Image (cartoon, rainbow, N blue to C red):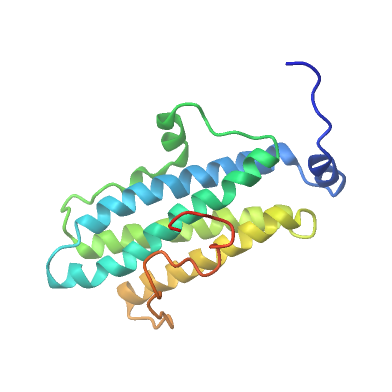
Length: 191
């Protein structure tokens, strides 16, 4: 393969105090969570049945499609920084630790489904906040992506809190499924 290239974009971040290896590790982990959440939200959404379930599908669909956008939004930064995704999809999915998003014992229990969705969004907030802290004032490119994903994850949490606890969220339906108002500039997912 030859000599390692001089990657100024990485060297500047290191000079700014960014631990690039740890940042790549966090981004790959977060990408695995977003990808796996997209899969599980697809399955959870399908099990929202009846009148109550039908009303929930649109909200879960918005969160589901935006998780796909979050996955795609961080991919270019992973590769720009010299990282890569695992070769095996199973390894990538296992890395996420999202087994808690499997269908509940009663697969059509909408409250249990919403609780799983809320837990996923809260975990994503913690994960993306860590990346924001790692990059704030040091890596504007990664910070821009992470803060936009964090903003959407906070919105998703508010939606599920509203549904579970009757806590107003100020939620207005997206103009179209997967609108992703904050991350659309980072991802080509969904057109």
